[in-house]
Image 1 (cartoon, helix red, strand yellow):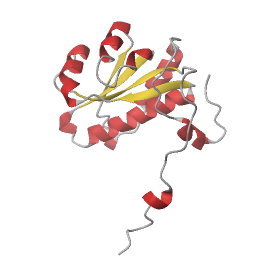
Image 2 (tube, rainbow, N blue to C red):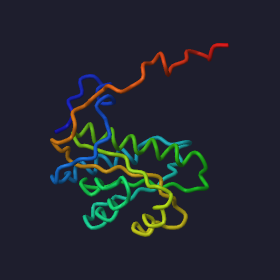
Image 3 (cartoon, rainbow, N blue to C red):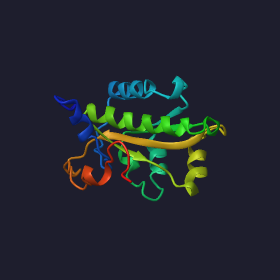
Image 4 (spheres, rainbow, N blue to C red):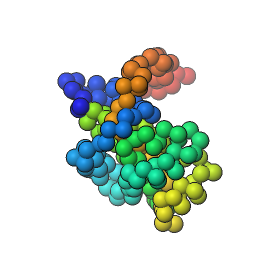
Length: 174
């Protein structure tokens, strides 16, 4: 069920990393909306320094969940991977990060859960092989998306440092 957003800030405050999903599939309409959000994410000079891979094959998702800290990946309906090109320098990773966050926001707005996935350098070659990633592309990260499990912990807005510890106004003091 889509999030009832009366205050737009609530979308941001309610978007969180989830790693537990039900086996209820995500509708094609919701997938299409998430893909459009990703496609329309802003990028440096509108260069769109990315390529996307949508993974919904259950066997492939199981293989991608075999890596350390990724055992939850196959619980999602799909995994949305973002690739960048090394020759794009800092633009590629920055823009890819924007896409990952937008996919999470879109999932939350649609009443779905999402969790960002990154691979360790030692796993890159295997993941590249599993996804048959062409040489000119580099894996940046992915987002697992699925229907939220009732077992997911309730939203907890605690655990953040107060602004007084992390905010400097205008410039650092002498």
